[in-house]
Length: 260
Ligand code: NAD
Image (tube, rainbow, N blue to C red):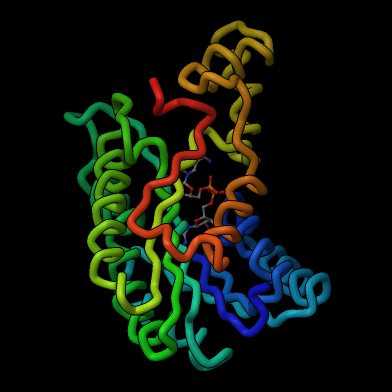
């Protein structure tokens, strides 16, 4: 049980982050949501967590590409719930382009969000974890932290970077009761992925099954998507006593993608 713990999950208004934040709340943790979206939908997700799981949930609209707003996210957790015990750096975006056409501002945005924001949140949260002699940092990396694909230079660089940051932090914090790990999903079934299918069917003249198997899951040997709840289950496991000796690890959940 995570009762009495406080969890901050960045980018938790949608997809993987929302599943992780709900997974922690189900175990009894108070949670801080963060991310963009329609205010009424975010408020509905927040109050649903409180009523469904009997915990407290706060929301921070901090834009994590801006270091100046990140302090406020951690401060909200400390002011609302008395600390930060679990930190999940999950917010991330993708941009696909050849390097010579890659807009420099897109490069800067992806490095800021997918990599640097984790440095800034950790910098602010670690003193609170050290004070309690317990902490869990989980970074949502990607199969692209282990292998590359063309045209995703910023994303692949940021995800390889977060794998390195994870290892360095794990070594620094090894004797403080704080573990630091990354979860590296392959293709995860999210509304974002699902909504791409009809357009791809039209553009390539393929059936839905062909798009899924030959385009989306080309690199994923199981030919099945990871689910957001499976990622959340691993995040919950990493917070338990059974995982206290797992630190500095990059845990793939990719249907065999990176075994190839
Ligand atoms: P998503 O688009 O559903 O969620 C992204 C979240 O980040 C949203 O809550 C969004 O509001 C938030 N966000 C975006 N920009 C932000 C900013 N500047 N500041 C704060 N929050 C911001 O995507 P997802 O698929 O759930 O992805 C979550 C993480 O998982 C990302 O780091 C992504 O790289 C990683 N990932 C996803 C997949 C996949 O197949 N979906 C695979 C591997 C890794």
